[in-house]
Amino acid sequence: MPITVGTKAPDFTLKTKTPEGLKDVTLSRNFGQKQTVLLFFPLAFTGVCTQEMCDQSAGLEQYVQLGAEVIGVSVDSPFAQEAWAKVNRISIPLVSDLNKEVTRAYGVLFPMLAGVGDTAARAAFVIGRDGVVKYAEQTATPKDLPNFAAVKAALAN
Image: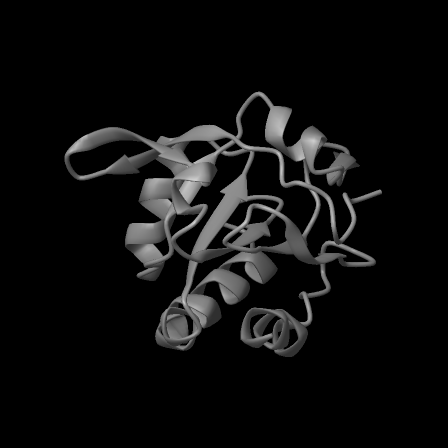
């Protein structure tokens, strides 16, 4: 069960891979400055995840205009995420929750996806400038995409 609207968002520092090397991304760096959209997705190099991240990358300017940063979170390694982003021109920062601590903290662990192992469920959270969850959604199945119109509406409020 995902954490609920009104909950203080669990802070985290996770790794992302950039051309310059591994870099820390900390959620709370946005507190007091801008809103954050966290998009949890099961696995890089899969069809629905690729569609989701490519579509959101293509519409990234809409999030910027709403005063938000978008961060993708998966249990993939930062090296796999970087290769996937490069191949698919994904411009959203992707962070690695390899040990699944953040996925568990947000209540979106998906057990035994396709018999392979535990991954993040597909989920979307809007975190306000105050660090409080303004929108929370876990999709019914990993094949379903979040309601991005509702995500943007939460950012606009």
